[in-house]
Image (cartoon, rainbow over all chains, first blue to last red; front, side, top):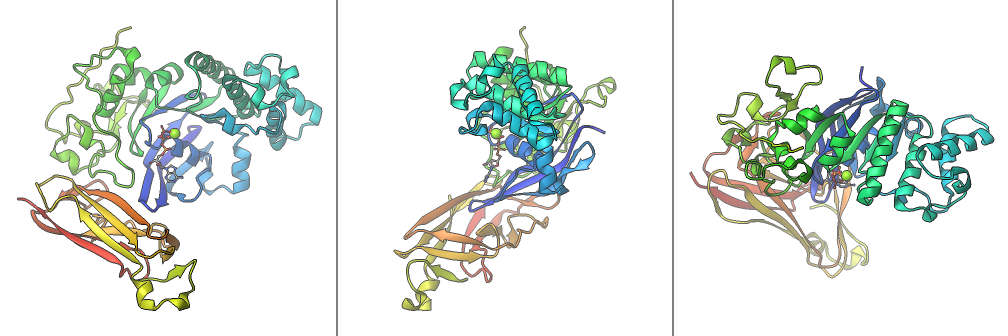
Amino acid sequence: MALLEVTDLDVRFYTEEGVVRAVDGLSYEIERGERLGVVGESGAGKTVAGLAVLGLIDAPGRIEGGEVRFKGEDLLSASDERLREVRGGEIGMVFQDPEEALDPVYTVGEQVAETIRAQTDLAESAIRERAVETLDRVGVPDPRERYGDYPHQFSGGMQQRVVLATALACDPDLLVADEPTTALDVTIEAGILELLDDLADEYDLAVQFVSHDLGVVAETCDRVVVMYAGRAVERAPVEDLYYDPKHPYTAGLMASVPRLGADRDRLPTLPGSMPDLVDVPPGCRFHPRCPFAEEACTKREPPLVDASETAADARADSHQAACLAYTGDLSGDLDFEVEVRE
Amino acid sequence: MGVVDWTNLSHALLPTAVRRRAVEMHLEPDRDVYPAGDPVGFRVVFRNRLPVPVVLRVESPVPWSWSVDGIDRGSRVADPLPDDSSRFEFAPRERKAFAREWHQRIRTGRREWDAVAPGDHVLRAWVTDRDRSLAAEATVHVDG
Ligand SMILES: Nc1ncnc2c1ncn2[C@@H]1O[C@H](COP(=O)(O)OP(=O)(O)OP(=O)(O)O)[C@@H](O)[C@H]1O
Ligand SMILES: [Mg+2]
């Protein structure tokens, strides 16, 4: 049993514009200690998927179907009380904006202590000690002295470390990190990513790492789910995805990752934009932007199927893609190639 | 059409006939004739004619919906809207416009769609109140 199993998740928002199908039949799992990257353009449903796992979808949103199992427990039917216990306990979370996550009127030490207090029966002195330790672990210098400082006395990068401390204080098994470094400078970002890496190893922490940046995901994750318009279009171990993307959307995304040095003649960047999720195209929802689209793509939605070339590749962590090229329904070939220059 | 609430004016001051006509609605395709396979873009436009706020009570969390040739949102796969009520609110003289694209396809199964035949097709949109009488239609032609 995987640590987290998400099956056919369906999350909708009911708005004046219509029914926003933010997550539509999404399935993935995360093993203990595994780092899973979730990538895709803005509006793909990455954040909504993470919030659904955490039980944080509010009106006008609703989870309309599917399953979220964490250590076998069905979180979608868990009580609010149980969900609060899970969040900040067994599942930690870090979002893009540390300033939003921290309360400006409490000291950083108190905020870390509070999550420990909510989850344990430790005595006050032990809570404080553990909070100091956690601040130390996430690289806040002089944690004992800085315990009583307020968030505004910290830089953005240090604030994000404090948020990580609140997420990790109770030894979670899973961390949902949603663009945790997007708001930070590149040098600060590198430091936080390195820290995440170390902590994940040290704590045997599984991470659902949401990012629009394939490069960052490559450095941070073991496996990747590529989302397009609310669905997973490709799932693979990170190297396989990089060296041999199977879905034309992934190939297009890769073309916009400069550090890969992709050959732009052979791999055009993606034309157009993601569809509005109130109005998803029929068939393969990527077909209006796909250079390989055929008539069949407008009439049939491809399931996520094994796309490995050889039987030996088709292991448990196989390479899957949702494209009719892999169900035998396409008459042409996907003739893109990715050139990786080290 | 459904109940119209007046937030600033007493109901009693205005005749029912006027309240009933408070909001007008149009369905506007971006063309009249489409080559086969081309997306049919259309807008659904609402306008409050009155200089006072108007609230329409609707029977769904989305205040309007649409169909093509009588097929709800172009799909034969049942996908009913939840039937919670909500409010469709307009400021004085407010105009609201929503865009949709219909790809000349009818969904026939979980993963299957059919192309429609050439000829005339009727797009219809309506406010999701109880009697659905506030509605608008337009006919588009798909070339063979
Ligand atoms: N509260 C809400 N009300 C209505 N629609 C919403 C709401 N929250 C999210 N959505 C819609 O759900 C879809 C998925 O949004 P989501 O935030 O998950 O995208 P994302 O992949 O995280 O994008 P980004 O990279 O910009 O963070 C979008 O179409 C968005 O507009
Ligand atoms: Mg997001």
